[in-house]
Amino acid sequence: MKKITFLALTLLLSFVTTSIFAHALWIETAASGKVGQKQTVKVFYGEYVANERDSVAKWYSDVKEFSLWLVGPDQKKTQLTLTPGANHFEGTFTPDQNGAYTVVVSHEARELGGTTKYHFLSSADVIVGKALPAAVQNPNVLKLHVEGASAAKINKPLQLKAFLNDAAAKGKTVSVFSPNGWSRELTTDDNGAAEFTPLWKGRYVVEVSDMDKTPGQHNGKDYKATWKGATYSFEIN
Image (tube, rainbow, N blue to C red; front, side):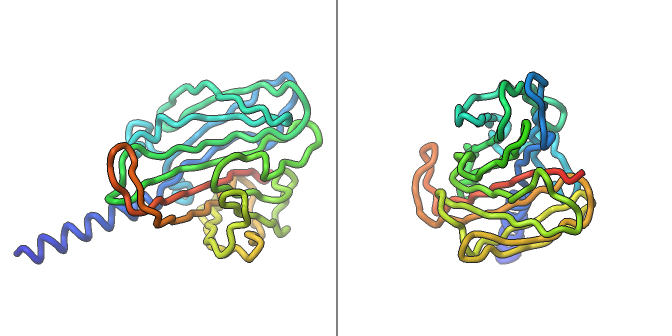
């Protein structure tokens, strides 16, 4: 009986851990904007590939207490005010100059998942006028950048790059989620790069993760590893 109970508990913990790993935080905003025109930014939590956007009340731990930051063409970093919705948070900003803007989230969940700390990261770019966003504009410790995302077309290859601590993240698994539920896994090369060809119009979310097995303490509790998950969102019209 004890063996059965232990097995059931093990399976339950495995399911909970898998569910947390499957969930991600991502940003949705228009890929382009105009000077003097308000830009809306929405942040969701759930499983994009399954078109599941969790209600804010069900977000894991204190993830709903994240901060949303805007990095402008001048590299100035500004925190955006957030308004909660049923299944997302919404913020706005008004571009005051042409150039590339990046909205970013970096949030370590207060609660541990067993002995693992969870760090959710996300970013998206907004182009005002003619500009090319650069990965260096994103201050997150783990990040993705899709080359030429603002001008992406279906049936044309796109290259993405993953960075960890501002260095190329080689050998990392990157998941690509399409707007119709199709997904694909890629592996980054020595330069942190990978390539895929979008086949449908709509919003794509790409995600990279990293497991750091350096132990430490978080909010007074010991952990054995830190899981980081970073998403990048862009739209193909």
